[in-house]
Length: 412
View 1 (cartoon, rainbow, N blue to C red):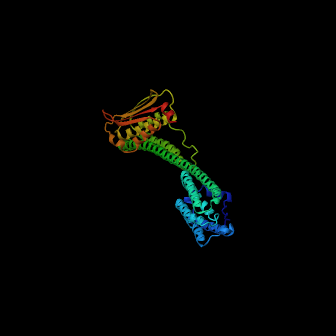
View 2: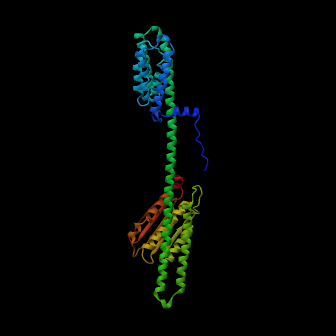
């Protein structure tokens, strides 16, 4: 068995600070603690009334009023103003009967302190001033005028309690604002983490779609070519053509396996700080895409005029857009489609265009999957735009404008 570590109890100073900073309305066991506090204050008042100022021992009514003044303290956190009013209503006749004037002071100060830490400062000051005026009036009416000075000195403690309570209230508000700010910052960090996870999942989904759709399409076309050669004239089998088709299939599988491994490493990676994506595809890989489309039976005409290497993100977006557009053309534009691919710079942007003749096209099915969505997302990711749709003369066309400078700098 493993030894259990006893919980470390907070020190007295830490408990005092926690009590000062805690909202009295949310404190645990509030009613039970206030009942204990009321009993302690009642015992203290009994001692003060019995052993101090022996000339003014309370009579039966005085004892009743004194002890009853402590009962409302049990609910001081729930209704602080009503509790203070009840204490005042019971204490004033107690003083008017000329009983021991010091005995009910602790209970009165506790009720007043509760008001000051739970109410607005203006209301607390008005309550203290009203209490002082009422006490002086009662003293002048029913008591000895010589004791007014003692009453005013007692109210020095009242003012001290008022300002201490107001200060504690402001301190609690300050601590609450710090806690709220920390919680808001934590929520912001969590939302940012969720946003990054969503963006990473979307990126991986796009990569998997582009990779698998392109590779599977090429493998399907190349397999159809090999099957056609085998079935066309078995007696005059063109072994060289079959071997070439099978070799192309193997090359496509190897290329797809390498890209798929790089993408899956991102999913397996536990530490987000490690970069495992590998080099991004770029415009230097576009000729390989065109050659793969030719091997699949397409007639490809290209116009590639890019004088300088674009930023990696722009190059990767252009590569994926061309890849997906070629995949759609090979899949949907009929046998041996004529495809025109153009990449050139104009007015600070890289312009991409892929169009096909679509002689027996099923162009309507192009937008049924996630290909067009992925291409638009890739264009938007670098601050660009993408349009795709049927051509008036037949076929399908994809055009994209990807900024090379300003949009990327602004996004950064």
